[in-house]
Picture 1 (cartoon, one colour):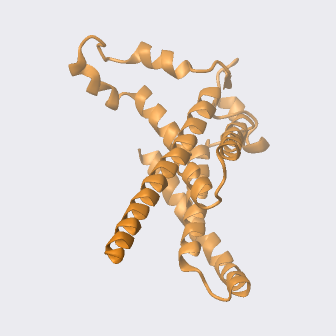
Picture 2 (picture 1 turned 180 degrees about the vertical axis):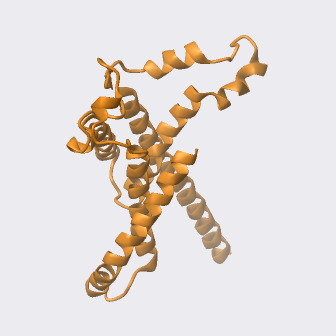
Length: 215
């Protein structure tokens, strides 16, 4: 948990630096294009920027203490896992849940395997919402972008941040891509469902108002 908090704190500091550099040009561009500053639009853009930086920091941190990461790894260490759905077999092997005893089901919420799966799915869950709400992308576009972003993260880890470290310091895991992408698609559909209910509720309300006016 401390590592995650450090990553988020680092991301926030980077975010503040970036915002201090780009805010004036961005606001001037917005005013020149629209004739006014759209504050909600600005908030969405800044929140997306903070989210993007935070996710990247969570992916790459903590950094190794040396650039010569090969020297601190065991000979023949595996740097990739290409077998899909290994997380399922790992969870079933490690879990303390007794499947014929429902009283034990709550144990899974404290287990490493379950928490790791949830975190991997939640990593790109907000991205699915942004792509649906802000960019108005369709499902296939969203699927392509989210899977590409997840692949980018895994390649970043496999290459040791593109050669900055001489050996990968994290595992390239096909399961991460599957879970990240699944979470992003869940975010896409979650927002779509909420929007649908919100639209229908508003339409129903407007119809009732119209009926009352006719009476």
